[in-house]
Image 1 (cartoon, helix red, strand yellow):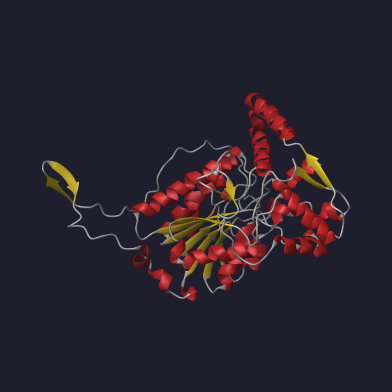
Image 2 (cartoon, helix red, strand yellow; image 1 turned 60 degrees about the vertical axis):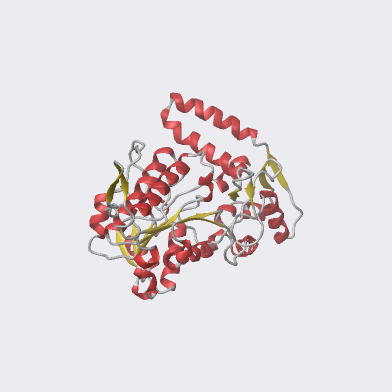
Length: 407
């Protein structure tokens, strides 16, 4: 039963292929783009000081980004991770709003590469699809070189499961390659799909995402004509639906501890895609980190289970797994990984499961250090109860299964 709960909480496949070889963890570095002009200097009593009188102030982002005044039909948005779970919804929402979309996909996408290029083109139509490898910066820029200019970019990449090397390969380097390619095509705004859990970085994929967030902010600081939006969503509906079919068959709902160790404000895929699309034109969302959850109050696993039984018209039946069991498993795997490096990812996956079982997907209150329902913004209209009800009626087969569930 504990394994069942873990499988519903752990991230699964995402929008990029897993690494074929292990890559070393990168050291910090900056992106080589033209810097903003330096201020002129003058001498004052033997000291060199910046002269604000001779250098005009940097233009505001609004003045430096004329694309924001264009109609959506006149703007092109680059999307990487376009075949991923959230990326597909983002492409569709941008197309629905009238944007021209340049979608980057792998030659073989989908879970275990089941989708052909023809499948992807049909699925993302009428977006323009470019097949490339986001982990290869030279190939990515070459494949996109004839498809510019673009006005903005959205990156929906995430590592497959949060493995150590894969996290740095995708959540940092491939995301950095997206930024470099987008800037080379003229992108003035960059929207990053991150995760609310990076605010308490105990896992490797969180550290990789934060490293890129830092570089993104640094790029905006160097160039006043460039802005960004970092979107940090809470849990996705699909990531909380893993036990619906099991409970529907009469089995108990499995949770850790008393079911109140953590809480989240889940957001639907459509609502999240809409929020991401808002970031393209909304000047108020520029150069900001934007945590976002769905409507309503935060829900604990206990409340989610009670909701599920209520929709099924059954008496609640729970199995409560001591969280200490996971601590023991992680301790063993950590020890084995020191002797057998091949177990490094297994130990990391255990830590990911422990994190999601005990840490809330809500905003941390900087004053109290506690997770806050009130400080976590809500967006959209779709509720988890509506999602559960639909899955009960249609089954998970009736839900679109993409490649990304990490949050």
